[in-house]
Length: 383
Ligand code: NAD
Image (cartoon, rainbow, N blue to C red; front, side, top):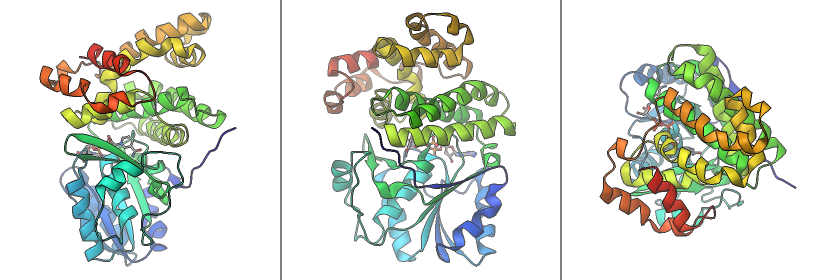
C-alpha cells in the first residue's frame, strides 16, 4: 500500500519563462516577487520577470531581502510587505531560500502575525493532512534558478531561528505552478551548481532507501540519481551547457517529488543541525556527512545500496549485491572528489566547540534513524 500526491503543475523547458505572464494572470493583478538581493547576475532575470508581468498588467512588489538559509526575521519582513500591499499571489524566483521564504509568506497570509513556535512545533510531519492556517492563503508560483532543493514540488519550507534550522511541512506549501526553465541556471556559479546538484542526489537517495518508498518514488529516485551522476561532473566543468543544465533540472524535480512522498533519511536532519550551527550551505553539509552515513548503513539495505552503486559504476553489475553495496562508499567518495565536495567539517573551519554543540544537539536523541550514539559517531567521523 502507498500514497502518492503531487499537486504542483510543472511547466518545463528551455524558454518556458516567456509563459510566466500567461500562467500568472489567472491569479490576479498584484504580485509579490520574492528573491535574494537585486544584484548581479540575477538582477537581469528579476528585471525580465518584472517586464513580463507588467506587460500583462500585473503590478509587482519586489521583496528582495532573502538570504541563503532564510531566517524568521526575513520571512516576517516579507509577510508584512505582502499584507501592506494586499497582493493577490506570491512569485518566488530563485533557489530554495527564496522559494521557502515565499512558501511561508503565502501560507500565513491574512494572519495577524506568524506564530513561529506553533509552526515549528506543530507542522513537523510531511505526510499529515494539516488544515489551512489561514483562509487567505495566497497562490504560489515558483521559478527555480538552482537545481537541487526540489522545493518547487515539495510541502517543506526550511527556516532558521537563531542556531536552529526548522522544516515546516504543510500540504499548502506545495506550489500551485512552477516554471522550470534550464536556461535560468546558466548563471549559477559552479560551486553552487555542485552543492545543489548533490542536494538533488541526496533527496533521491534518501527517499529511495526510506521505508515509505514505493514503486513510484523508486522510479523517480533512480532516474534522478542517474541524471545527477551522469551530468553533474560535466556541469561543474561547463555551466553554460544547456543539456547538462536541463538534465539536472529534471533530476531536481524528480528527486523533489520522490522526497515529498517518501521522505528523507539520516543525512538530512544531521545536515540541518550542522547548517544551523555553522551556516555551511545545505548541499555542502549533506556532502560532509554522506560518506560516513553510507559506511554506517550500507549493510541495512543491501539490494538498494547495490543498485545505487551500479549507477556509479557499471562494472558492479558483475559483482554480488553485497560486494556492490559495500563499494558504494568508494564510488561516492570518488564522485564527491570530482565535483569538489569531498570535505570534512574541519575543512569548513568548524571549531571543536562547534562540533561539541552539534554533538550535544537534543534533536539527535529523537531521530527515528538510529541511536543518539550512532548519529554522533557519523558526525564525529565527518570531522
Ligand atoms: P539558495 O537559494 O540559498 O541560493 C544560494 C545562492 O545562489 C544565493 O546567493 C542565490 O542568490 C544564488 N543563486 C541562485 N540561483 C542563481 C542563479 N541562477 N545564478 C546565480 N546565482 C544564483 O540555494 P539552494 O541550495 O537552492 O537553497 C538552499 C535552501 O533551501 C536551504 O535553506 C535549504 O535548507 C533549503 N531546502 C529546502 C528544501 C525544501 O523542500 N523546501 C529542500 C532542500 C533544501
